[in-house]
Length: 456
Image (tube, rainbow, N blue to C red; front, side):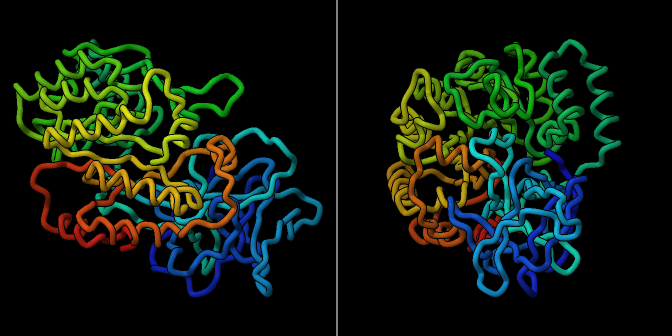
């Protein structure tokens, strides 16, 4: 899969329907002006609403999708039309193009394509957002879902990151956790690891090499013959001293500090509940500053109770769906069920702590009426504080087939879905990142309360 970085800036919405974009045989990304950009909701091909298009955010990437033909819209009839060859070089092959959005942005439509042949291998584990071209820039069907700048590309000075990372790694060669995070920072460009070495915002604390789920879209471990994982899973369980060696300096010195167990480079941290409970207790004996968070599948409510008692501030629970059967088919849990996930949320809320839902968004699935009804029932019952609008990083064809979503009708639309949730639950927050739960700057509080950038 070819990737091209093409930042764009300025403007709110395009003045006319953008053109379809495609990749030629050399991987160059071009536009086909005779066809309009299309988007996809579930299995439906749609024309993006003009107000749903924004310039491609800086830090996003463009992907050329192998064995998938671009699909646009006939400008006269509005009907979907597959581009079978390069308009500029007749007979030359073309590939569909999708955008992988920068952090803090959520897709409204995915990219449409037509497979060249049946039973194609699944695409790598990224999100595939609809993209087009108009007036000298790329446009995507998306919105900014969190005003926090913590992973904006202009906040990362790469030479400074390398200097600080290599310096700290050389000073602390025996802390295996720090060395692992240095690899994540310098090799994978992990934004959270970069922020750790810049002493600001949220820092990662991976601890678990094992997991009790076999998620279809796991980004750190995939079976042989499947799409490759996008990063290497941690191979050891750190000691409490190693955890404290990373967490305490960050909480004591960083601006708006958050430390989070449960990362893309590990399994399920609750499988090491003793380490987590001891580490949280030790952290809170040493400092009351910052937010101690756990990202988790929430499979062990008794462990969550221990962590809340130890001083855990917040829990982020990952969900692909609020419907138990769809949840089961994606997570494929090994020793727990959906009821235990709900019990963990209930336990954390009973302790008076903050709960986020890390809710994977796929247009045409997340906004189906049945899914909205199930999510609304969960929210009404458990009262989570925040929904993080995270794009599902998975081939949508593979996902829809795997979870058994047979409804070909378009969803409500992501904006309409979000507006309805806001109407039903006016005190529920929406965003993208794990929040710092201390005193927040007034302007950020105001922007979050007004829903700026979230389609409210």
